[in-house]
Image (cartoon, rainbow, N blue to C red):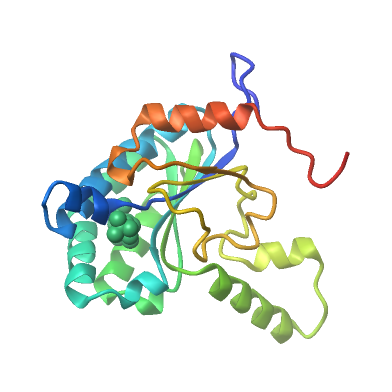
Length: 231
Ligand code: FPP
């Protein structure tokens, strides 16, 4: 967890990308313009985060609950996904970053599910880092699915076994959880996994969350003392 300069670098950063709508509103633009700006920022950030020495990055793009937004907004988001996804999967492949998508695929349009499966297979051999995109994801739903799987197995499970049953089962827990856009809540993101994450909230709206802002969050993490409930 330390880079060349001796700075403490989180191994896994999770980000709740909030504030696209307000970013657009401030500019008298439609919400879709905010999502496009957010998408562009997400792509830039996904490169910068691995350049910082982080190995895992989980981005909360769409919660289970977000899927109840008006059809027009959702269609806009899925169109953006279709437009940007193929070229960016290629970029991840070139950088040896493995793409993972977590969330309930049954809630997504079939062609999006197809693109996700292709992107995951294409980048599966990436060794430099893992980018997990949470789409149609809910922390409670993730826990419930793991509980049901444990019940199906017909015996009690340990904490480690339970963690492995979650959507992020093959990833370490997030060291740093960032939320942009002013709200001070977790909003059904990685509820189990974030038990000991350091939390970082910023007023900066996601499209304005620059590489420098991420560096600030990593620096703040470096100053935290993690005790995991011990002395
Ligand atoms: C929260 O802002 C943002 C979202 C619900 C969508 C995030 C999407 C992206 C960053 C683009 C990538 C999209 C996909 C599907 C991969 P908000 O709309 O809640 O903003 P507000 O709180 O200001 O209204």
